[in-house]
Length: 334
Image (cartoon, rainbow, N blue to C red; front, top):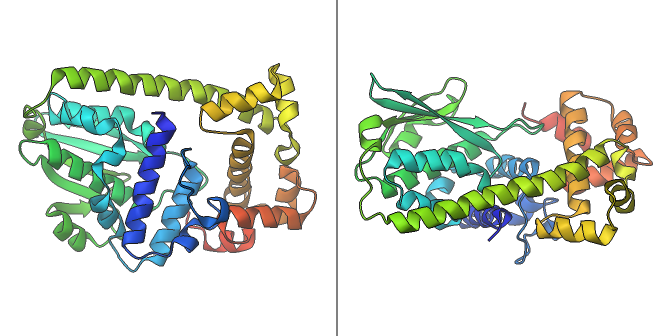
């Protein structure tokens, strides 16, 4: 199993939960996948900007103030792939959480956990730090990640180690607290889980050291494979970025890398990607940066990206995000 397969399983699990809650799938997926649907054989990772767009749409379409909690509670823990057996067979919940923080990138590039221990207070603070991107993280998405982590920790721990959770103050704190049977407070800069140091150091019952070592080695291999694939992808993206993105061809990049274009296509396919996907991903990132952060005129963005005319850029943008550049900028959450 590749790291991209785990990411795909995780996304499919989230989509299944959205569907279970009655959200309109066609509107959620518009422009994110071909024909607005997730193909059965889709095993590639969903790009970070697309994943966040998905969550922003879901929050707009849902009447649930605690959508993230509901999704986090519905998500099958098996969708976390190799992380689940590693956590089940870790020596302690604390060690399991350290693995969650280390291998989080196998599931999603949305962010990482930062663990801080206050020994005198007997507490562990686990901040969730979102990755930088032109599309900001969605608050319900962050809530679902914390909820999923809570469910996993409670499933493997001899005693519930949760003390409290900190989330954005504009969320329904009392409802979240009731759903999770947990104290919920307003967050500072980052959302955070607060855990009992003593309970996080209790031995996990029924663990198997052999299974633990096997799955740990497997996860380490997947991380190495991901880094190698990122190296290939980054080389391609850098070459695309050095020129006007929309005009760069596969043949041109293959020539710069000194390989046959079919060899390059095959290498990218083995990593769950393609030249078209990488080029489109870069175009989307640059389009959002120029539109939202730099707030350039549509005509200037069209020139920067290398589209022949404004209408061509507008068509491409709408196919990516389901709305025109102007509509997207007017409704963007910064």
